[in-house]
Length: 472
Image (cartoon, rainbow, N blue to C red; front, top):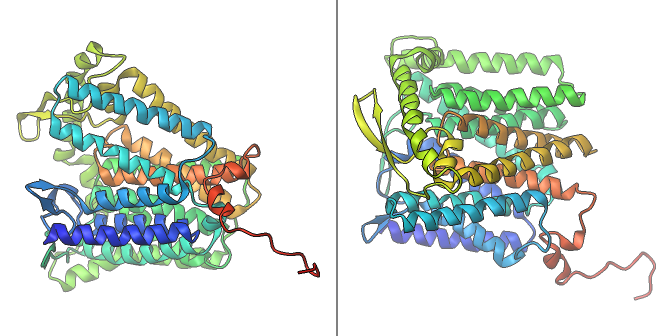
């Protein structure tokens, strides 16, 4: 029953995506994907503990995720309406080359008989990263419109409630037919990264908005604070690097952003209320009072468990080093596993990840894969900075800066975490890269409108409007 409902829901979403693409509302497709990502991250902090049901159904003993089918539906709808671009830009070519080499790594994994289950799981990155072409098809004027700010404001309000519930210790499991969550109300590491990235986007957009500036600033407060609530150092590093990147770029480009002092005071009071309110809520719920967020931050930085986790990463990097030397250029293919000593449970563990995204790529795809991946990420960041420098429209510049900062924060987190296997974060990267490509394509002086993604749609049924006073 759960699998049937999931497939019906995916089919309905496919029809919705198809309609949105045909009517020129591509941004709505991206917001649908972001909304599903936010809801799933908020309801299920740990994606590995999602119980069987609507979100994680099974057919014939094989499990799949609802988000998998929704992502494929979005890509299929985009390709059916828009097709493939007539002209590829440098960033598009870099990502396509990386995907091509990843496909080669998948074939290698099959030939050398790597773990088939892990190979298929790792290959899902094709779909989650491939959603970048859905986001890249959004015209720039839609990013400037009110839809994205409204979405961020709604998400910020929801995350504020989630943050209060999480920090006050009032989280309760959800037990509904086909939709249950044992850890609902908690903020996990994936959610902290997703919310923190959206917080950067809300904050940077607010600095360049006039009508919704205060609401966006207010929404950014719980979104950014959530990066501290999960107690994961990698999430803090990612969000911190994204914020620092924005500050540095704004300083270098000398962009003048002005926020009234009164609004800053109110935002400061709101931040203080979000930090202090869990103490009162926790006391009402019978919980011993404690300073919110400080406990999670303290545990993330100095707890014994985190120290053992750090040693485990060192052990991983030491054990994987000989494997890297064996097939340095081409890699071992997708699904490659190795054993290392994990000091937490004090046992040897077989794993396919290294807690470092570059080492993961190096292990599976070799030096060629690493160079292609770095070239794709670098090209994306350069494109984003080019839009920030050249664009005369503040909202376009702000959106490009925030999306580029999100890519930088993702990469920074990837230095201490494996991310391609985390489907939520892989999807987040695909959407961020697509945003940058969309804005960059619209500001490329060499771009030919006839070669744009939606050129064929614009040509179908498009008739010039007669000039005023012309004979009819």
